[in-house]
Image (cartoon, rainbow over all chains, first blue to last red; front, side, top):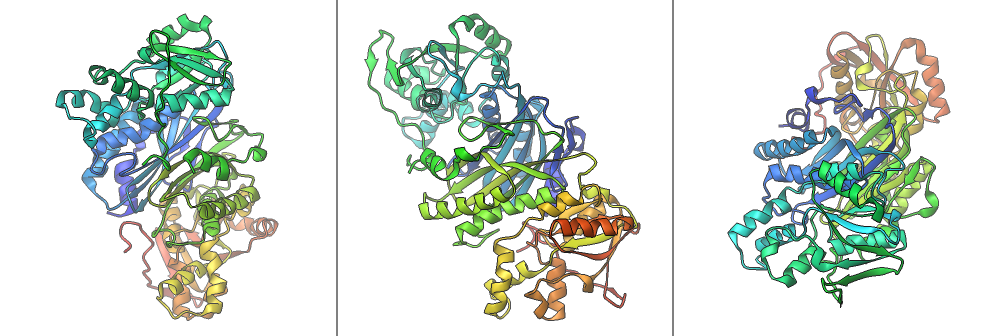
Length: 320
Length: 320
């Protein structure tokens, strides 16, 4: 199967064009109608053995590659429009391509996000998606918009993706029932697109949690020149993690990574509006702390005692 | 050096923002002003050992990664606006990053094309750039726009990049003077952005030549439902290739690849306008044949004799 057959067979869907796509796959470039509002762009590259284990289920992988990109749009409050896919493959494995493209398009269709172009090449298994969306200038949930006094919120639950990784790596004793509960959070994360869009005009700053809540929150704090106090025992542990020891719960909630939940700030006066937005997006949200004017992140327990914890945030070049 | 230090040190340039970039590197997504016209998008992934040799000069590589993407914009007649960069690196090699980023930004600055976001990860050396531009709906040089009777044109010269590869692979006896002449065409290709923009409203269809003129031209022919006759002895061989045997000249001009010249069609009535556009873009153009209504590509020599030649176009999964 040639490169062009591969694209035609697995990645071209003539019946899935959308009005905003003037010209899709098959030319030097894609042509899109200009955005009505600001154009929102993000890119993520996933490497076998680094972001996913060798032999990962291709359907889940197709889902996850797009999900992590849509999660960035969600963290900006943007509506997805389209994406490009660059794919380096060791060989043409048709069963793999079938599963990968099915997982990719199932999620793309859920969000009305059209594949508009791409590139395929032979090489190590590497997947790079660039995603496009749009948002109003006033609605954009920027990292630099948090203000002292804001509530600090997080969506969904934390830590189950990290727990699944720990099981698979043999870091902790495997419990098959708990793994079955946690695994989908690692393999098929749900990007909080509906919540992000519902929060525009209500929330101030937002980030999606990919490297761990503690580390990612610090990006909001430094970009906004504010600090925060966070109640570690308010963090919503995932259902699998909730059955683990309090220490592991705290660690994986604060520094687990791969959660793809939204961490966001909103004025106190918007509490009811935040809950309504969450309800309309069918996504749980939990108030976990407060933004203040003292730089840095302070962590307390449910009795209000200050804790000294240091869990490193994931970093591709310093984390082993 | 951490992932964030790496981005801050090599890829963040606060003094290089442009009015169209509302928010650049450092948030979940970039925010751009909506395009005035159609939004043009293309992506290309380059893999070490596949698109460039291991140990390639990092400055040249930074140039080439962006050049191949800008070449796609050129083939659409688009004006470059910005790009994202996803980078998988085996390790943090500061000398390499210094050279790579310098080569990348030197070319980006030439074209007013701003780095708006990206991703870095540890892994095999893989570089994925997604580039954005804009073009008017009437001006876009689409592959499906060629018409019978159009002249067939090519920019610049062909085959020297392939000759440089042949020298380096030891496929032909090395001639250091000739290699010095040919190597820049392989290592530092010039995207024909100014020519592409100057041809909007004059040319009809265009493609950039990355896999070989013959193979790439066939994409125009099939998408436009036309055919072409091409005079192989009119093809403008590069100065290094011009000193080689006629057979090698023909083969590398027609099927060399990595040329990054534009192949385009234009009405006969536009001949003077094409030459004027080429002159304004300071880029040579050569008329090499004619579009007709008989499907397929026919190749003749300077005496008008039909030739039967078959040089395969490069394909990542069928070319060894």
